[in-house]
Structures are given as C-alpha cells and as structure tokens.
Length: 217
Image 1 (spheres, helix red, strand yellow):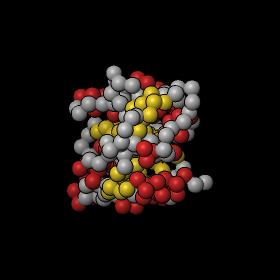
Image 2: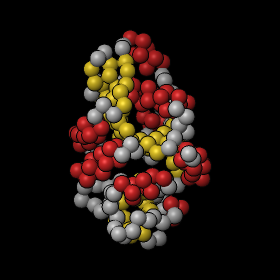
Image 3: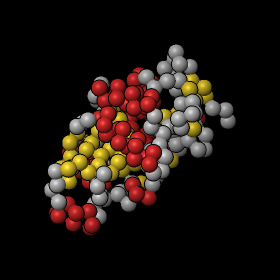
C-alpha cells in the first residue's frame, strides 16, 4: 500500500481507514492551524522525528480514557489525602509543552520539535489546545497538554517534576472534563501507565462514533 503524499497547498486528507497496518496514513503537508484541526476532527494526528517529513497517523485500534472511568489507585487516594493539590488550565501553554519536550529528550525520546511547539501554540492561542498544570503543596509538580475540539480532548504529552505530578494532572483534569460533558481523552497509543489509569483499546469504528458525538455542537 502506497502512503498518500499531501499537497502543502491543499488542506485535505485521505480517508483514515486507508492507513496501513501500523496506522501510517500520509506524509508531507504542513502544521497549519487549518490542517491540524481537520486532522484531529477525523482521528488523524502528526507524529514524526526531527529529521523526517511530517508523518500523519490514524491507527486502526485506538486507545482512550473516558473521563468518568479514570482510575484512581489506592496509593493515589492516599497521596491526595496527604497533600494539598490543585490544577490550573493554561497557566503557560508554551512552558508546559516545552517541559514535556525536555522531559522526553532526557528520557525516552521526543517527537516535539520547534515546528511542533509553534504549531500547537497557535492552536492554544485560538482556543483549540489546552495545557494543564498540577500543583502539590504549592509547587508545580507536573502537567500535560493536548488539543481540545468540541467535547473531545486529544492528549499529546505529559511531564513530571515531582512524585505523581502527571498523574495528579490527569486525574483532576479528567474530573473537570467529566463535569463538562467530554466524551473521551484520546491517548493515541496504548501504554501500561495509561492502561493502569483506565485506558482501554477500541476499534476505529467505535472511536469514530465517540469522535462524531463529541464534535456535535
């Protein structure tokens, strides 16, 4: 199966169902606000290394967390009782995204480059992306960022500065999303960490139904 090459002058994607077995759908294009919104609205997202062209993905099996199903372990409940915790939304989007980048560069590697940082900052400036920062006992402990369209949140990356920093951000943010009627947190790829917090794998067909529901005005 040949991978679809995008035209930078045309904001268009092929049917996500045409992605290959690994989930790769298309290559090229740009990270314009319009293209990113079209992509996420159709279950497509960019993910590529610094020296690669832009790669667009639409995995056939999707990994999500329904906000109402976020799992809070016994140890986290104990942690919450022991500490003063709260989150802020959009305290500093650029800072949070960059912390996610630095954290991954020091650990497992990152796809977040200068172009990605600029592109998602444009989304945030237009109310289409959010950062979440968790505070424990008054200090910044961790956070996450992602795209927010309708009642769907597409998580991109997390960082931790202190014990349970990113977990605190995700748990409290999930409760906020539930209160506001969000239908899912799209985690893109399965990880054991997110699976332990309530993440489940679903088919693209199930995912598409949730996406369509969440995007309804």
